[in-house]
Image (cartoon, rainbow, N blue to C red; front, side):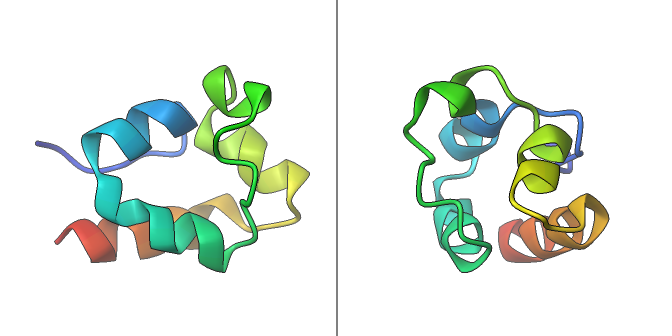
Length: 65
């Protein structure tokens, strides 16, 4: 598989890389099962949560190896 990008959907990331759930939790994404997670991409979700999307992508890619 490739690398995670900020254009990817939240659910797409979690389904492809379940180990990323801990990173989402670290950044306060407690609503990962909410309706917004079904249509938001990573960048939009990060901005809503006040998180730097580039830093989050870096952390997500680090955990998937």
